Amino acid sequence: MPPSEGATKAPSRVWTDFTNALKAENPVLRLILGMCPTLAVSTSVRNALGMGVAVIFVLVGSNAMVSLLRRAIPDQVRIPVYIVIIASFVTVVDLGIAALSPDLYDALGIFIPLIVVNCIILARAEAFAGKNPVGRSIADGLGMGLGFTWALVVLGGIREILGSGTVLGFVVFDRMMIPLLGVHYVPMIAFVLPAGAFLVLGFMVAYFNYRTLGPKKVETGHSH
Image (cartoon, rainbow, N blue to C red; front, side, top):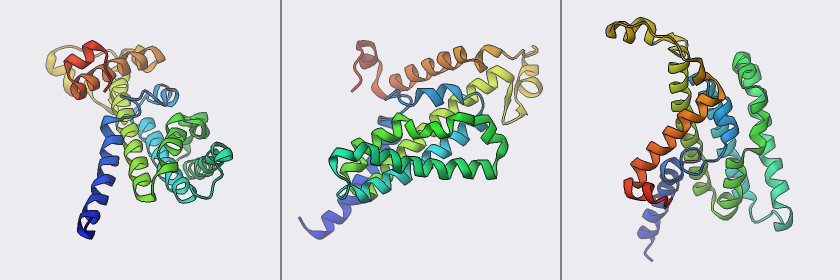
């Protein structure tokens, strides 16, 4: 294969890894992974964005480190080593959020250290980063992290708007939209509760699969 062909193929594979992780293999809406933080912290856009950024940092960092060390880690102990690597990056995130944004730290609570056992991160280390070069592993981690973040932010935005009528603390319905319709908006507290999270997420998953797979595949239950 000519050098120019190999040079063009490498960036193409990195881009494919990134876009696949972002959309086709979206961890929340397609793979249905990481449901614990997805449902628990998506009560607002702020919380969702904070968790998303934390997961991006850990995913990219752990993927890069696992890929760099993939030939040096004995196969028999790879999972414990992966967890130690992930825990190291989670510790950095935990201390960073506590120092920079105490309010966000209190809001996310136990779900920051629980990133260590987030199945998205361990799954990408095992299934991808441990078998691929650094560039592709970083692209995969970034795509997965951004895919997790945008799904979480959309979920948090819908729940915050319907549950409290606000986005990032700014009133949306009460002062802007609802008066134009001649009615007064009453926030539906159910959307801030776990039941609301399941309901909104269910509609999001259905719509995402309908748009990406098409109506025939969704109706017959095929995932690919």
